[in-house]
Image (tube, rainbow, N blue to C red; front, side, top):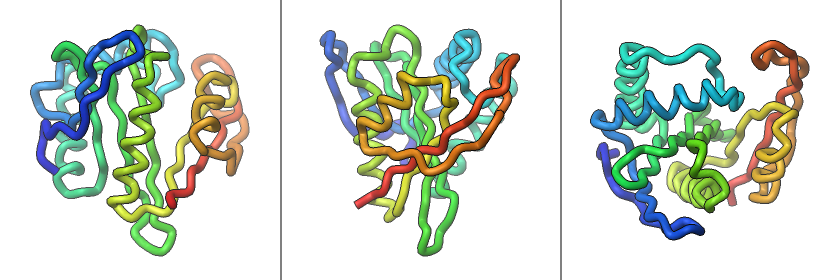
Length: 181
């Protein structure tokens, strides 16, 4: 898929214009800032130590190569020429159980404006184009707000992974799944 390809434009509840597009190499600084802000916030992303510029370059190169090879769908949301959200679908199997694992990250200050809802819609549309059967995500059981968000959008709890480390404590991790019609 073409880097920087605009998929959709959207206006938030407070009137900000959001451009949903595939990422590009020029997003590196914004992506680094976004990831490190999520780590500072202790949002429960898969990393707890800040990302260096070198690590971000390596990660972005891998993700964009996977995007180019259609191993992943990768989406950036941009407001005022700054990336404020990243989301993806990692394709985990290519058989009759054709599934994707999703991740969505939205920067603080941009949550609660409808961006996440629009991202889920785009990810479901892309899952259909990729002929996926299910989308799956993992979330800490303590994250009640996000659990409610995903369940409201048709995800159901399909598994529980007990006592996963989340910073200094152990918390159950829920697996939420959405069937793609």
